[in-house]
Length: 237
Image (cartoon, rainbow, N blue to C red; front, top):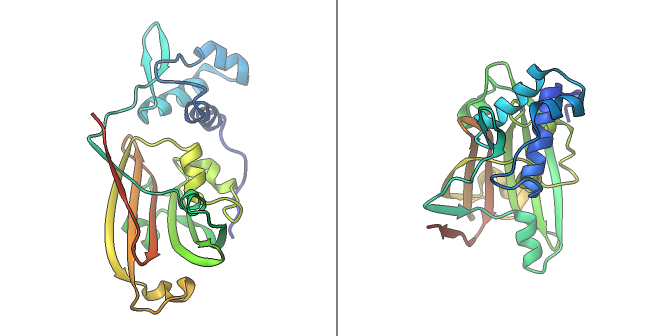
């Protein structure tokens, strides 16, 4: 596994802290974000640093900035239909089965890597974290997961040990997104046959998902399930 320095620029840490409060529900839609001078005092930094953090949050669609009034948590965007892609550990436990995660690989790639270029758009020269893992239910393979995470958008991901926590579960709990795209495919197990303990020609359901904040890609993931798997579509008014 390739390591990376744990220190991040202060504006990214301020942004991440506010994102965390939004994700946890401590800050609700319409709530005011602390004023710039309050954040400057709290973090001991310049107005420019605070403004950079708030601008990134606004660009991601998480807050709205109102001249003379401050910044507020944005109202969630309405979606006509949302495909619910499961949090695999939660899905396994909901079935009354014991969950175990096997980390196969966790490595940093350059934005120019062929795997990255084929799946997502990230800033030139930036890094992408590639994670491959297997989800197990009651000691048997349940799904393979191949995931790419943009470090430009989620810098704290380089410090997470994904042998201890599922990347999907961690992202759902810590990283908000504004848009998602899903693909549903049917493929033979192929190269995943050994890891899934099935024959190479076993039919598998493959889910691919890509998420964005504003126009910035956060993550791409491919999950491969041997056999049938239920999906849910929820319609909002």
